[in-house]
Length: 214
Image 1: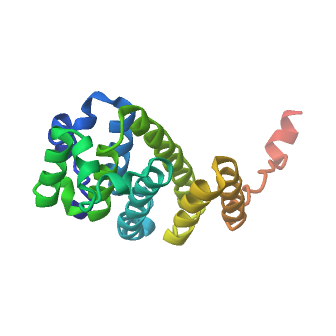
Image 2 (image 1 turned 30 degrees about the vertical axis):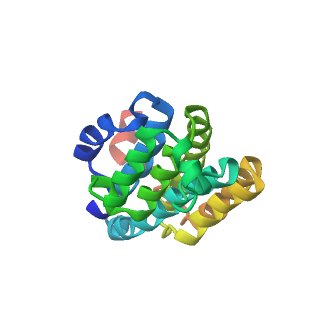
């Protein structure tokens, strides 16, 4: 789907020309967000649900990246157009990139939330971007775990659950987010139908012919 920037052509073309190309961890986090809604359900019954949910879930995760950058490193202040002195301190290249981003001419600008997340990363130092990206990848892993269990248990994935996973991770930390995901997944697995009963054992009655052989 184009509305969430997730095409392999974009990832191969756009990403190679961006500031995060030399930062594998950062590039990996952005790639994960951009490709998120390409995830396809192997269950025909869930295929339509998956296509509808992925955009909302990708938005939640992109906002999570912005929230990490804002909470941990005050990224919002660094891109505030009213704070000219801070913008000058970012350097010419960063300011120019921010200006271009406002023109919304890049492929991923079709997604406002991913656009904002990338701009929040852009104004951070390399070390700060790596810290934020590591958390985003960790958060994405927990969301993927939840989605996999939804699929295996044939339950509809809920954007509200994903948002709770994100908010728990950001506010309460990784350990409590993991506990929450484990509890949700356990509840989902309880809804799985029991496996089909094994076929009855086949009994071979001794035939009259067999008796004669004895």
